[in-house]
Length: 384
Image 1 (tube, rainbow, N blue to C red):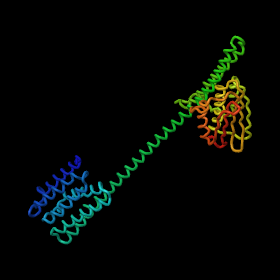
Image 2: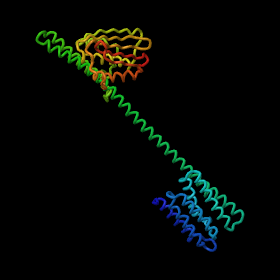
Image 3: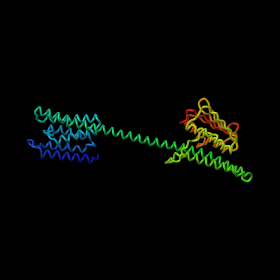
Image 4: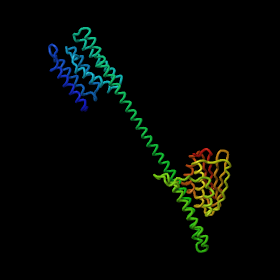
């Protein structure tokens, strides 16, 4: 057991104060009984156990008061001893659970009453001392100790709750950052994969036509340049959220949606034979759902460019009873299994996007050859 320096200092100061009052300032008849001096020393010394052995301190104090009263001591007549007793009772209320604190306070009060009654007093003097001891030496210090203990407990609980809230905020921010990174990664993949596929097709066509038909070769190279510019512009828009200053309005321009399908299909026609059919009636997807619909068609065309260049592709966007259906079919070669099921930012990323809006996506090879992407997005699945 290691005693605390504060408790040792407190015990030493009160011991010196009590002994000084007993031997130098007490003018009572007959001087100070030796039993009172020894008992006082034991009582004040017990304060060294205040924090580490609180109940032992209270037990030593109570036993000392009982014993010295039976042996003829008169501890309750000393003011500095009353201060030491107040400190003991306050420590009991502060450091022990409420029920145990009340029990020890009752024991200390009984010991003090026994000591008061054992001294030869007139009736008025005994009554006043009993009230003084009950209220000021035991009652008030106990109440103060219990109150401070409750305040400390509440402060600790508030600190614990604050720590939990702080940790929860940090975890929420971390998860939000991960979600944002995943979203940006999907957007970048969609932009880069589609644009690079178009550029590769156009560059290959330009190379084949370079000597035979320079005019068409120049047109193909111009298409490469145009697709590259569009890709850079869309990358700036997608990554604009990472900029600390948003002075560039183009960086935060709206994301593409179904309204830009004509432009998307026109770019893909350099390497594919694409037929587009759109019949949305009065239905419209909003916000992120509209972007998701655009990205689904973009991903399907990109895969067709990679795996079935020159194939005929049918893109159909139609409204049904509760949403919008997207159907992209090509008649090219059947995809390799690994290409159709790989977990990356391609088809798997599309599934994640669709699931986020409460929709469904089915992507698989067609029995007659080619590939089919069939997705459905509910009209109310978008985020304004």
